[in-house]
Length: 142
Image (cartoon, rainbow, N blue to C red; front, side):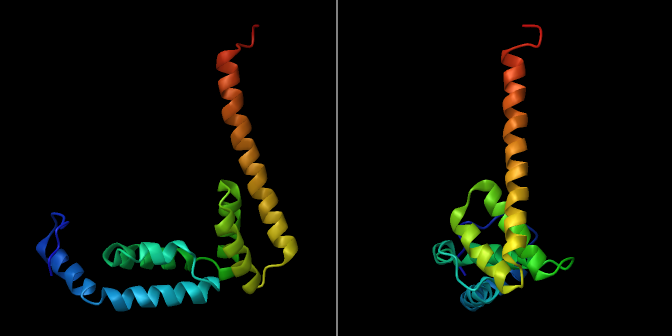
């Protein structure tokens, strides 16, 4: 296997990685299938990321494990994703994760509430940062 971007690492670790990557196409196909099963759709960014199968195999697996945490159920994980997507204004991600949350049993009311919480945190983040700048620009004694 020719690997022009090989990083310097323990030779045994590198061999383990090289052995894993021999099956990278199968791993990538499985990751795509798992995302479709988990989210109900394949997000549009995944086929583009898959164009680099070496990277996608590792990142995709990490993402799948993150989306399926051991400490919470799928509905809770999807509601967290809805909140995060809402907070950063990622509309396409928001749509995907709202659908996935609904499929996991979340209600419209739960999704509304989680978006309201995201908005509150986003608002306070904006206010906090803006008021700090304002206080530096306009001291209290003026």
